[in-house]
Amino acid sequence: MSDIDSLPPLRDIIRNHNLRAEKSLGQNFLLDLNLTAKIARAGGNLEGATVFEIGPGPGGLTRALLQEKAAQVIAVEYDPRAIAALESLQQASSGRLHIVQADALQADLPTLGKQHGAVPPYVIVANLPYNIATPLLTGWLEQIHKNEDLYVRMALMFQKEVAQRIVAKPSSKAYGRLSILSQWLCDTKLMFDVPAAAFTPPPKVTSSIVRLTPKAGAAAGIDFNVMEKLTAAAFGQRRKMIRGSLKEYMPYIESCGLRPEARAEELTVEDYVALARAVTKDPL
Image (cartoon, rainbow, N blue to C red; front, side, top):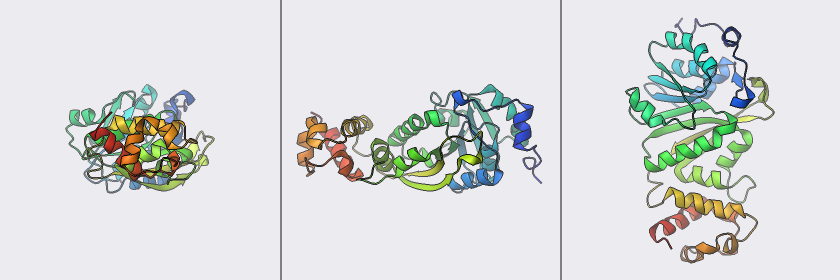
């Protein structure tokens, strides 16, 4: 039996440290170690990898990541109560668990990796706090845009509605900005759902795990800010034809051979990539 296997049950950890889930922090704890192991495996082969985890809470997923033989786990946690609760796991980790107290929205993961002697590519596996999940993902996509070799995989938990937006196809209701930003830079796959009853306390929604794998060469010739601005304009008025919502981009729409009568959700990710590349190459 490993030192990690001999740790107290998560419910005891929570009780001993008075670690009640705080709604303001987006906390919902997963206590089923079979489920946390499944989430860890969604991150692919972790043996020898440096894995970032956001919001470890009492450490259920953290245990699973260590048991999947990650070389080190860098856990970013805002709540000082959770940091205290993770101390026994840190002691049992043989130096493989590093706990960083920080606001995940302000944390620079590559810098943290460097501070702990790690080198890219990294893996991110996390049950993201729902209230900051989308900005976190957008920030990591921007980092991938700058360096496609920074992360090899991300296995992330979102509300199911957000997960469906990430993997949505054109002409579907869920298809939008997040679909395009994610699928432009990564291959995306909806792995499995996690029912609300699996959490303590149970949230009001079902959750889903999405795996994102960065694509080689996807960022070439495209300014990230151009893609963000372009998709914001298109989907900010998604019921309009693009000749209206993207009026200022009409020369590029014509040069890319796109139909001015199409609506935002009818354009494919490849259409937006072509449009953004044209704008980046020859801005007005």
